[in-house]
Amino acid sequence: MQNASLGEEEYILTIDSGSVTMEGGSKAAVLYGVQTLRQIISQKGAVLPGLVIRDYPDIKNRGFYHDATRGRIPTLSYLKSLADKLSYYKLNQLQLYIEHSFLFKDFSEVWRDDTPLTAEEIMELDDYCAKLNIELVPSLSSFGHLYKLLSTKTYAHLCELPDSDKMPFGLIARMGHHTIDTTNEESFALITGMIAEFMPLFRSKHFNLCADETFDLGKGRSKERAEEIGTQRLYVDFLEKLSKFVISKGRIPMFWGDIISRFPEAIRELPKESICLNWGYAPEQREEDTQMLAKVGATQYLCPGVGGWNQFINLIESSYRNITRMCSYAHKYNAIGVLNTDWGDFGHVNHPEFSTTGLIYGATFSWNKKEIPFEEINKQISTLAYTDRTEHFVSIVAEMATKSVMDWRNVIEYMELHTGGSAGEDDIKKSFLKLDLSKAQKANQILAEKSQELYQVIASMDTSKRSLVKPYLVAAEGMSLWNSIGATIDQRVYHRENPAAEDPCKLAVDLEYWFYEFKEVWRSVSKESELFHLQNVINWYADYLREI
Image (cartoon, rainbow, N blue to C red):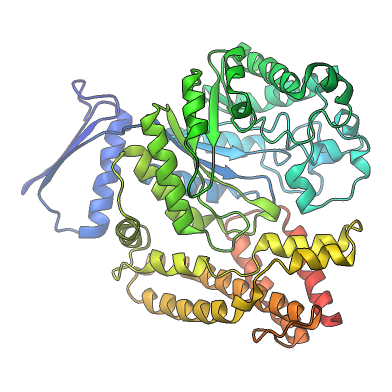
């Protein structure tokens, strides 16, 4: 029941010998209490402990950011299950990263080879989230990272770089391009038209403009103007215009803070309503950016990451260190929110379910400033999220995650250096030989051992959770395969003896069989999306292995 004497998000859960009572300062607070009760029941069963819990969050806005653009577009059923998970761990905000992956009505040239999210799906998800006290916030690239849109015949003339429609597709190129030409009046009309179409699908009071990583700004069509007034002025002026447009529609603009943090005093030129999303993903992320933004009066969220991009299994220990550090900055500098991010660079090979541990880290340390040691919280997550009575699940996969000697970024770089046409053999060799493939044999041995440990853990898990193990085993097999592929290239192409090298033709077959399993895991949570790009990578390597 609601109790007006409690804080808006405060609840009291009481369990005694005869009853369970719940009081909350709002419907949201009561829901938080219910989720706590569910967590207790999941661990204790019908014999509940006597207790009184009085709790409330230290930070009001606690969110999760899910990449729905760089390869994977999630199914609606998966997004609903993600919302359920956020609610279970008392998060109250969800954002989906959208560049080209929404079915804009006039953009068939953009989404014709894809399986985009539709307006109906967004509105259904928005309704679903609202019932769980989750604000589904629209997030749309509006400045940089407009690769697919600005590569079309129709809109290439609005790209900062000329002839963008003639440039071949590349997973690496997509990470760095394209930025819109701010000096063309059509650009603002195009972007605001997209915003106006997308915004009404959400009941949220916020709108995330993104506006990050504008790498090409001032280097092409706006170069002359940039030489006159500077790229800083180009950036701030365009962001200010977009922010004012969002405000005119009754929403609060958000934007990523990587550019503005270079000249933080410029935050004062933006509308006072603006929220800066201050991101940083390093395990030892520096404090100075947060400190400087706070000093100039920025309203900010702190945005750590779950460490899954470019990896087959999320780097759990690195993400723990990053998330705890960024959450501590949020508490110290009075940030109004924490937005924990999950990206999918280079085709989004990382399985979204693997971000659960990092998601829980973010939920835990944004709710309560008290830190829990790495080993201890991993035991708790193993029990609560995976029903593993041995408490070893998370520690096993955390160790597996560190055994990728040739990670997904290395895989893409080696292929695209060959296929891009601009790199010579010396460049390819120099890039490849940076990898320490002498570690491949030992890494594969540990992956095999840890996979066996996961098999053993299954018996200690509830039957409802056992299906969560297979994707980890598929990922571990993939890591081992790529380590062996790297070792084989090392030996056969660059003539360095490597004990992890195998028969390349056998590896090609193993890779093709492994990808068949990978696609099954992909389709369990994602639309077909850009799976074909990953298939092209597999095909290239299988053919390459048969030739060396």
